[in-house]
Length: 176
Image 1 (tube, rainbow, N blue to C red):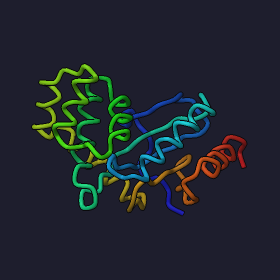
Image 2: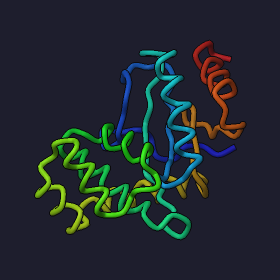
Image 3: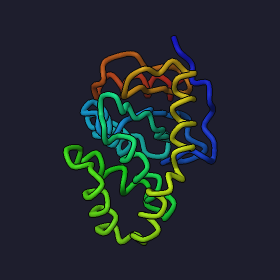
């Protein structure tokens, strides 16, 4: 069983309470259809678990399989620098077939981002080092495909299904 080698920190994108009993970490790729499925499942679990669950998303674009995945990750980070990471995160998963540069700019406009700043950050690749850090931390933790999930630092290796994931999280909540 793989263990998460890079602990959650203030550099991560986090939803939920810092004092949550369970932390779910996902290494994901915005162009991966399985990650889009995971996004829906995780959202449902977040709604059910409330403050008991903290969710962390880390980038693991697989550019060899998904050519727009790195730029999509950069777009999420550029939106994040303007306080809208999660909005862009959700938009990217909802529009997996439209992650070209023109579409990313459209999403920035829709979210009322400072588009000049967004474009400058994208053109300057300023968020690539953070994305590379996520990839490296994932690789060190045994991640080789997406989505890869960790529950309280332990690799989740069961089926990516709502009931299975929820059961594992609930077992962590109850200390089993």
